[in-house]
Image 1 (cartoon, helix red, strand yellow):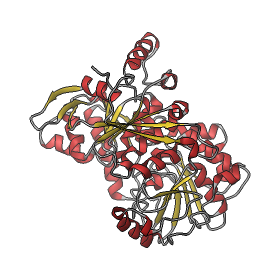
Image 2: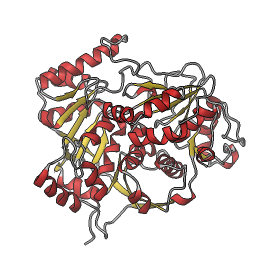
Image 3: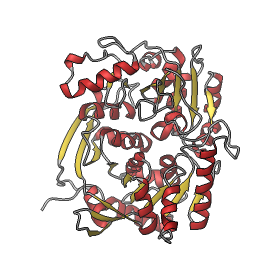
Length: 468
């Protein structure tokens, strides 16, 4: 009998029962809620005279719709203020722990979960946000859910799910200078496709992953959903345990030692069966840019925009739409394309290591004329650490706007938006049409360091030329 993957172990440990539909009723160990997808769910509970089943397992934060230029209330957008107020009152009534706007633990939900120690190996984690897979970087099974499912979890602490297959993604070799986790995940999505992971959980492994920091692993897991995979995870190791040690919500003392022993047992067995295996040579990667209207439309900085006739037939229609929207010409180079806006932040790349990577490129330079550049840390804690280390001064001296924590320009739910047909070099996770506010706005995705290089030069630039 073959061994088990971490996915199988954690899934089985949290299975309540098999449902007649063929789905599994899964117990959710940790539930995160925010101001956008939770108000309707709480209303559903009230309409059915239900209460939150396990308030101690639910944590709330504000991130999606909050302005990042100031923390004053009420916010100008009445609909946004209504949602913020609803979250506050719902959390209070349900005795849910809430991280108020501007408090020490507030920030983007997928940044604060790990940094507070709430996210731990072996957990099942749900949130009404598609990038919940981020938490898998610490060995959890984490998945985004819809508003109705948020209501289900609040009322029962359970969710009905189809069991996923497991694809092992092996990444080997050393990432070259100027190449980051963001480049690796864009390369993976490009190869497997935006629908290639549907029905799968992605297990990231290999010596490249072993050598990555926990924050780099978060970037990989975060964008699993961009490849269609509901879940992405990394087996917990010594880096995981060291990362969690001493964090506010992590076990302490003897409890931590016992937890580590348990967490080690969750690692995928050497003889575990995988439904598919995909390999990537990290040493051959270069800085990647998602140039089109989905993250799978990516090319390396040295490549030219693909010629339609050279693409698979099933990719041509989307490529035509991308060229029409973006204004790029097939067969030409992406390097040197002018940018109007540069954004560093998001749950993909708004952590301290991301800001350090970008600051290293920016230091001693200045943002190009007519380029608007902004940095929004992923959490209050990240912003505080960055300021303690002087990173904010590096950015502001260079002409960047130093914003408060929040989802910011990743999505058009707050005032940080593109206008007209502006082209934004962004460290976020999605480049869909209208994602950053303007229906004519254009988004190209890249690593924080690449965004920094684009901001300084006013055009898409190979960051390796700056690094030297």
